Length: 117
Image 1 (cartoon, helix red, strand yellow):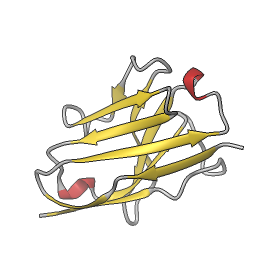
Image 2 (tube, helix red, strand yellow):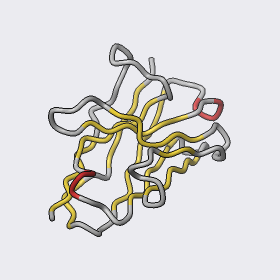
Image 3 (spheres, one colour):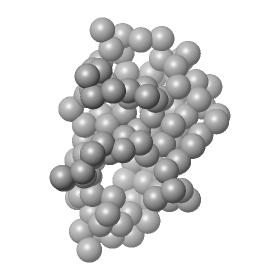
Image 4 (cartoon, one colour):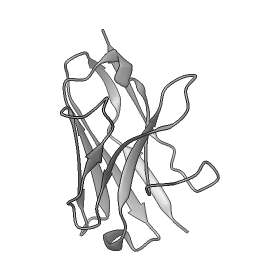
């Protein structure tokens, strides 16, 4: 069974940076596209960024384009999200998963990112 363990969140001031990590086990990680999602209080989970299996073919939500960078290390079975120029609107719980993951699928515990103004 797939396990996803996110880490790296925290409290940061607006304009600051954070780097999130997600270790994936129980799947053919190096063959899989991966994604980062986030869920803000009172809102639905939204897709933030995706990355191809070899590290190319990245895509971003308009709200984070130019500020966030998704990357991966297949040897470590880890996907990263580097977040720069953070805004209070980026406050959310961040999750990694496969693109197209549904609410009934396996999810990790997520990592909380809080951006203060």
